[in-house]
Amino acid sequence: MSNFDLIIQKEALLIKKKLNDSERHVVVLEEKGKTLEAKLKETESHVLVLKQKEALKVVFSAGILGNAAIGPFNTPTTLIYTRVITNVGNAYNQNTGIFVAPVRGMYYFSFFFHAGGRHIVRLFLMKNSERILECSDHKTLNDGADNGGNAAFVELQQRDQVYVQLQPNTHVFGGSYTTTFSGFLLHQV
Amino acid sequence: MSNFDLIIQKEALLIKKKLNDSERHVVVLEEKGKTLEAKLKETESHVLVLKQKEALKVVFSAGILGNAAIGPFNTPTTLIYTRVITNVGNAYNQNTGIFVAPVRGMYYFSFFFHAGGRHIVRLFLMKNSERILECSDHKTLNDGADNGGNAAFVELQQRDQVYVQLQPNTHVFGGSYTTTFSGFLLHQV
Amino acid sequence: MSNFDLIIQKEALLIKKKLNDSERHVVVLEEKGKTLEAKLKETESHVLVLKQKEALKVVFSAGILGNAAIGPFNTPTTLIYTRVITNVGNAYNQNTGIFVAPVRGMYYFSFFFHAGGRHIVRLFLMKNSERILECSDHKTLNDGADNGGNAAFVELQQRDQVYVQLQPNTHVFGGSYTTTFSGFLLHQV
Image (cartoon, rainbow over all chains, first blue to last red; front, side):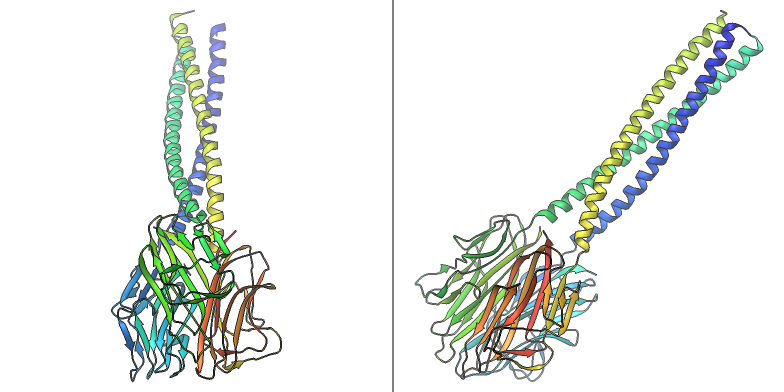
C-alpha cells in the first residue's frame, strides 16, 4: 500500500467509528423520544380526565309558578317546581318536579318554602323512596305564615331520583320566588 | 484500479449509504420531535385553561353589623351587609351591599334573616332590576320573631349586580350573625 | 496521487462534512428533546397539583337521630349530629359533633333546625371559640313551632374546629331529618 492508501484507510476507520457513534447517539435520542411520548400520552390522559370532570356541569334552581297554596291533598304529592331559574345539564324535569342523577356523584340539594298557618306544612326531600330531609311547621291561627328550608349533600347513583314531596293533609305556598328547589353536582365518584 | 482501491470504493459507498440511513433516521426523529412539541403545546394550553379556571376564586359571606331592626322605609332599600366574613375576589362591596359579577358564570347565592313580628318582612334577591328570589313573613303580634331564607343558582353576565332588597313598609333584623348574604362562583360559562 | 486517489480524497472530505452536519443535527435534536423533557416535567407537575386539588374531597351532612327536644341546658352545648348522611373525608365526627378542617381552605357550612315554641332557640355556628353565625327564635305559646337556618363560607386553618352550639336555657328539636348540619371544602388556600 502507498502512504496515501494508509491515510485513507485510517480516515475510513475514523469515519466509520464516528458514524457508529452518531448512530448510537440517534438510537439513544430515539429511546428518549419514545419515553417522552409515553409520558406525554399519560399526561394527556390525566388532562383529558380533568377536562371531562371540569366540563360536566349539573346545576338547577326552580320555583313554583303561581301565587296560591298547594294542598292539602290525601296522598303524598311531588311538588312540581315549574319556574326554572337554572337547569344546566337538564337533569331537573320541570314537568315532573323530579331530578334524575345523570352520573354517580356527590350532589347538594336545598329547598326553601313559605306557607300560611291554616294547615300543617310537611315537606320531605326524597331520594327514590327514601326520606333524606324534612322541614315541617305546625298549624297556627296566631301567626299568618312561616318559612322553612333544609339542605344536604347526598351521594347518588346514576338514575337516582330526588324530589320534594308534600305530605298528606299538609300544604305549602306555591310562590314563584319563595318556594324553591335547587341542586348541583359537587363531584363525580 | 488496485485491489485496495476497489475495497476503498466499496467502503465509501457503504459509508455513504449508512450516512444517508442515519440522516433519514434523524429526519424521522426530528418530525417525531415536532409532533411531540405540538402535542405538548396543546396539552400545556389545556392545563393553563384548567389552572386559570381553578385559580379564579369568587366567594363571599357577610352579616349586618349591629343589633337593631332595619326599616320600615318608604322605598325599596338595598340591604348593606357590613360585616364581611369572607370576600375572596372582592366582588361583594360592603359599602353598597352589591355583588358585581367579575366574569360570566354560574353563581350561587343564599340569604338568611331574622326579624321581629311587628312588621311584615319582604326581601327580594335581585339580579340587576329583576327579582330572582323572595322570602317574606307576615306581621303578627302573637309570635315575637321569625326566620327565613332562600337560595338559588343563577347565571350571570360579567358586571351583573346581585343584592338583597328590603321591600317598602317592611323590616328585618340587622343582626351581625343572624341576617346574612353569601355567594360563590360555581363555574365560568 | 492518482486520479482515483483524488476522487477518494474529495469523497472522504464530503463524507466528513456530511457526518459533521448530521452530528450537529443530532445535537440540535438532543437540545430540543431536553427542552421538551423540561417542559413536560413542568406540565406534569401542574397536572399533579390539579389532580391532587381535584382529588381532595371533604363534604358532610348529618341530622340528629331521634325525635325529641334537646335542651334547655345550663351551659353552651355542642349539638351532636348523630345521623350521618354524608361524610367524605371523615372530617366530621359524629361522636362529638365537631368538624375538624383537614387542610387550610375555604369551606361552606349550613345548619337548619326545627324547634317548638315553649323555649327560646339560640344556635351559634362556632369556629373554635368564635361565633360565626347565629339563628334564634323567640319563645311563644301562640305558635307551635318554627324553623330557621343559616349558612356561610368561612376560611379555615388546618385543625380549626367548626360546630353548632346550643346556647344556655334554649332548646331545639333533635329531628333526624329536620335539624341538620352540612359543610364542604370549596377550595384549598
